[in-house]
Length: 615
Image 1 (cartoon, rainbow, N blue to C red):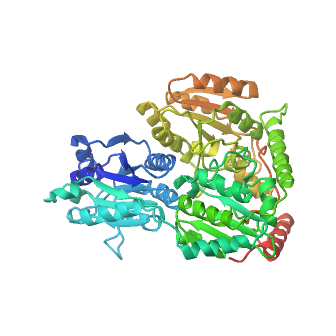
Image 2: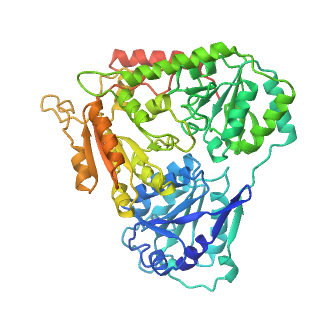
Image 3: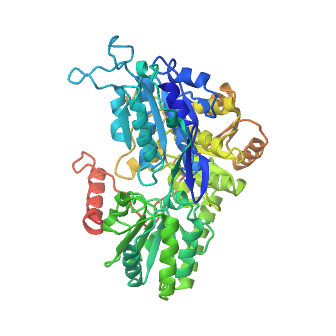
């Protein structure tokens, strides 16, 4: 059965706009007793074209697989295999990350014996109330499709369903096929045509004429529309259509994290990031917009500022999305279609009707110029006592070439990068912010480098995320895929430390400090961690930067290195960006011994009561 699965995966292709390409690039894996003698044996003796990548942590390798598919605009992917029990459970977080971000990853965890003869086996989770349950049932809520192959012939129907989901732009995400270790090794006389070259057609979904007319009529009734550009623009490769729509109709736009880079940062109508981590220009325009046109975004709480970003009394929403599930959010008028297809049609319809948004061109120019000056100011901040995070971001942004790729996911960096990073071209900003999963950064940069080996790839990662997961640094060395890790060492989980203090706390449990014998809390001095030494011990060329001059020298030296590099940048805590007429809702204690916490609760309640849309 495992041999049949490997051969089947090697024969899957995808076709978009008449161009065919191999869909499954390979399999990433860590072997244990649940898969080494099954799928491991199949891979060892297979003579096909699948590439095998040896992971060092199951979650890490799965994040690499996700970043690979994201960098390839979901047109190529890796599968991931693990043993049973802990190895499988290590991939559950990555499965959630893939599903939330709508990225195709195939998970192949080993499973307990289907025959049950040796039960309970090593690493088996026993549920006395339901003996059919294994650790792999934990994948169910985070998978778009889940199955357990308890007989070898079930493989045929299940793999076809798996490929249906993986290649569907509206349904894609994590797909999990649990593989009992005995069934992996059982023989079955599979029909020869199961292994035929199979092409999955990703046909662009056109909008219906009625839906297009409804959308056009809504736009024509509005004077000040504002467009939100999401990740679906990248996956549909609708970059030109997005720019043409904005230019033809005079509509300014803002970017989500996933949408960043679809439109060059210096385009006159690109007002920057939107929402809780938004720019001043985009947030002001969103607040005054009478129509919000959402393209390829699932409208999560950050782009919408927890549904507080849109304050016009007559604001309405038009959502263009290939997924009806996402298109209906914010009570939007739904235009369920491929972004490239529908944007072109909608542009023609509105242009033919003579529509133009009623913006003052000089006002838009001034708003954008004001924000550009603010970014320049933040880039230029210098302090005698250490490095400022915004100026470090500026130095890295200025150094990188237009085709270089940055990868990030969590902490304070995503917010600062969303606001400040200047992307000129698509597929240069690989941000995982649907799940904001700590530990994605280093693994994801390896996956992005696998996808684009001729580009320089930079992981921008905080010290907290690096400590959680950096094992695929070793894999990058093993595979000869150079990545550049720029590590922002600010002594702790400073993003959440700031969030905590911004809601009445004096700070608790978020900085990397020694435990104080006086307070019995983590209020002692900072832990002096030498991250450069950690990376050097793994075989990675390392640098430490405490000044901008040292940082620029390290970046230049790193570019000339043939293998992976880490730059340990010592950054002052609390030197990121602040809110720009925006808000993000978190739960604040209604009752507390701290008057500051209770005051924060009252402030939050006032915003919720006065400015937040109910759905």
